Image (tube, rainbow, N blue to C red; front, side, top):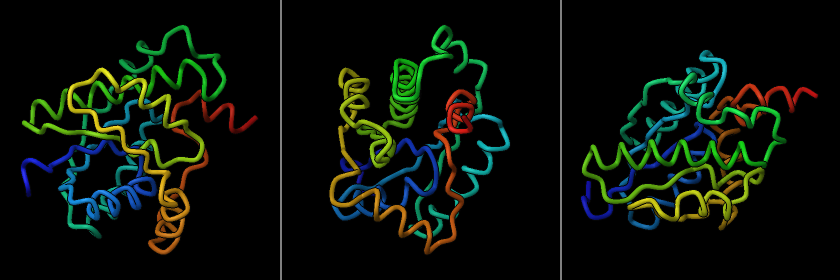
Length: 179
């Protein structure tokens, strides 16, 4: 891999990784996928999303680094924001949690650049994610929604038969999606 163009990619799920990976490869990056999503609940859902990411990684012949599942740590991080609506302060805080873990892992691995696939979702505001990462060393503010990223991710996911979840990941977004 090209060290200067190596990028650690925080990945929330296999479907969001698909078009994001394609774009990074097209732009000359050498991605390493980082599955760090302690916000996902329950743990079985975390594992299901991880397994689907492995399918995507195999398609593109990319390495995957799996972070420890630390849901209690994440709950402590968003404490007091449990009743916030989706897209509110809890989500911003969650983005920050995942970006900080990715920054830390990038430094541990000696990787100068990192980004997140969270920006591919039409349900997330890239500007909010960029705000949460703007002060982090090595953060690349890449809006994967651009260039039809979301539509492309849906098409590739369907073609690959990937599991597409119906909520962001945490128990609070699941509860809201069920209501």
